[in-house]
Image (cartoon, rainbow, N blue to C red; front, side):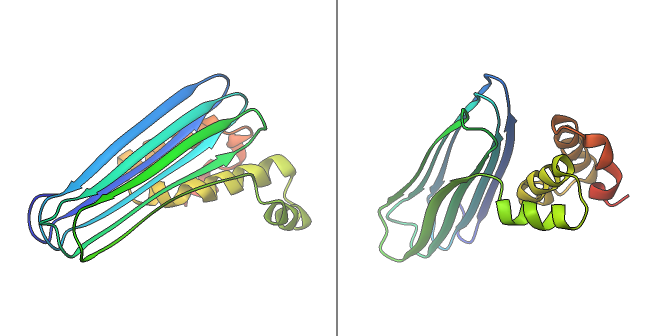
Length: 171
């Protein structure tokens, strides 16, 4: 991020199943003062799939006033799926506001119970929760046609996707 006041945003989402493997490596380097960055990666892993996230935000000495945030969130759908997340901050300036983090979890059983208590079949309820999890990353895609293409990929990746396509896309 080179110019004073410049902003960089990186968002990613990935869906893995079987024995698939995915590596995401990013680096955002702040070179000027008063710059910002936001980085959010979301992954859904099933079966024996594995993912690696290694993201780094570097704030050079000259980049005073930097505001940078990095987050990796992963939803594990099976006990055999694994994520290795390594978010990093490398800060050489004194006046910054930076954070990084990683979360890993399973489908929220309370949310699943709530949806099922409203008459939604379990497979459909699970799909809705996965879609909701990925929604934050997909909403950041500005171009409608590209966002729709990614949404279609998600819907076809999920089991029982035929029940969801029109409602989820708002059509």
